[in-house]
Length: 131
Image (cartoon, rainbow, N blue to C red; front, side, top):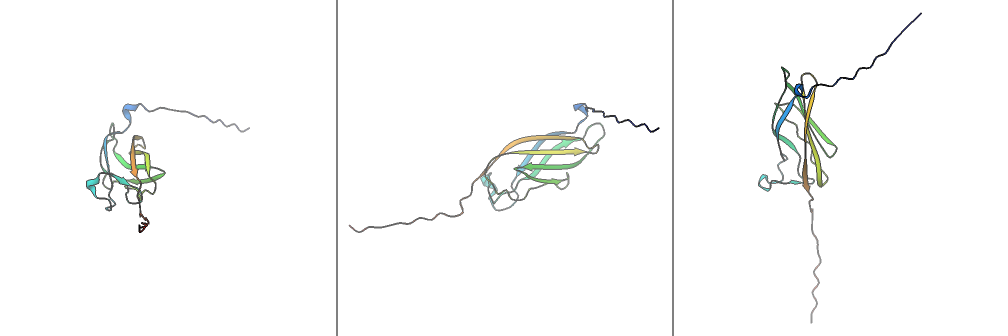
């Protein structure tokens, strides 16, 4: 006789045990758009986490940092913060930053970010008529 049983248990972690994110600063580090513009531009800008204030909880520590925007993701660590490749679309996008702690628990912060369209060239024809 062979007997087997399968049990499924769902557990919820108390939010006070999760890692936390206090603040995140995003910037364009691609070096094409002047930083004085303080704008992100389609086909010219990437998105990098330039600073983050986060922590583990009850003895855990942060092991990973991830950024997601417009179906583009990048992962890193606190000592090597992630940056995306150049974003090729324009418009307003959700951006989510997620940290993972040493117990594989996560915390996320989301916001909106706007990418301006780029105008690659302008052409026009000027017609002069003699009167």
